[in-house]
Image 1 (cartoon, helix red, strand yellow):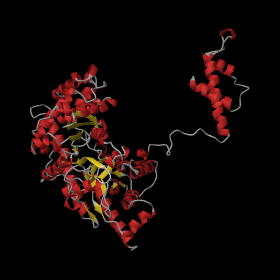
Image 2 (cartoon, helix red, strand yellow):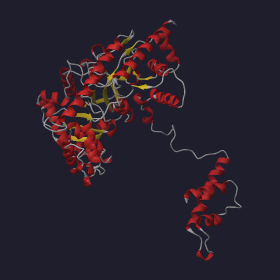
Image 3 (cartoon, rainbow, N blue to C red):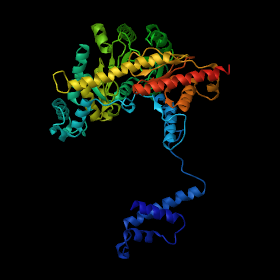
Image 4 (cartoon, rainbow, N blue to C red):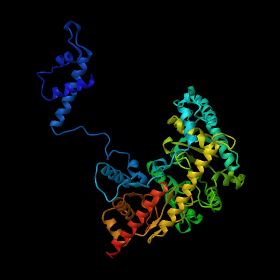
Length: 547
């Protein structure tokens, strides 16, 4: 009825007042009404609607429009400051080119190969069967009676559903997450580290990003020189700089040592900290290990130095460990910050505040879309912990399907269970292929003149340094863009390869990089790397000829 009323009212405004009076409008839409019944509610509503619409139309005819409440002038300035390179201008341009190709347009390539984001399944990685079985059973419990599903998957699904209201994945859980799953995560951490873990310190999150944002919200406070400073590695994952901008905190950069395989230099930490104290109050240090976008795995000694630094300077430590399963270099090993902190002794373990993050999105599962994750928070002030739970309760709870997926990751099939053989084969296949592609990427890029790529020790990315001729740098500046943005745009437009400029992650002045994921299939990765090689050589020749 409303749509009919709208059409009739617009006809009225257009000048057909002689045909559509309020009375006849009521009659035509609701039936003729006897005079003795009095005016209808519909009639009054339509009269008010028509009058308001007529005023709007009159305003338009006068060349005037009601001003919008939300404009770029009134937009939250912190939102304007947010940048997220992983889905920035390059990716938007790639989407435009893909649509052009779909509509029959011609390009010097037949497809866009996207290597801009760590989205494993979008790159062709197949799901882990056991994880999908458990989530399917939780989503549609009637399948539990099906002989097509193994008993170990059914047992896990029943246990997860017992923790759900109404035995349904469609219910809310406690804001901290399902209790059974929190206990499973604590058991996983104890087995991984050999260190006690209290399940009440475990909080399920909507991916690791949700947990990181939540902890930062607790930490950011103060004004002017007392405003919270957040120490982040450069290069960094743009979530951190975006969150800092959104919260109007102060970004404190510490630079990783590219010449030493992106290691963390303790002297650089002290330099960054002392410089930042002149204009803010550093309260937190963030570490990504294994690294994104740099692919390094930090040594135990390095982690000890960071924790000692945090202890001395009274800093809260945030350890992003979502790539803990992704370690490829034979001489590297993942060390959790919690384990190292424990081994440093009670003085450290009982005092340094630490939040560690994990996710379903990376590792060998690559289940980005489930948005599952958790954080373990230790040594947090008891009263602040109450505030943390309050803050988590505002968003009600993380998706229960993501919680179920997280539970499978921390509670996988054991050797005596029926699904273990297939699960182990699939996991080993994924991680083995990633290790091969990490080595392949390093080798091919380092064979290209003007490109230097550190070993991809872990995670899912390479972050090669690229030489950009001075004439190309000048052209980029004249166009108002970063030189590596010009490089990546040209690479996309000429070869159909979508990578992310290093300037989106941060880099030392005068250096240029791009980030690419190693997730495409081996065959497609070889095509991608071959096109990067050909483009780079052509790019150097073009601009060197102008020198």
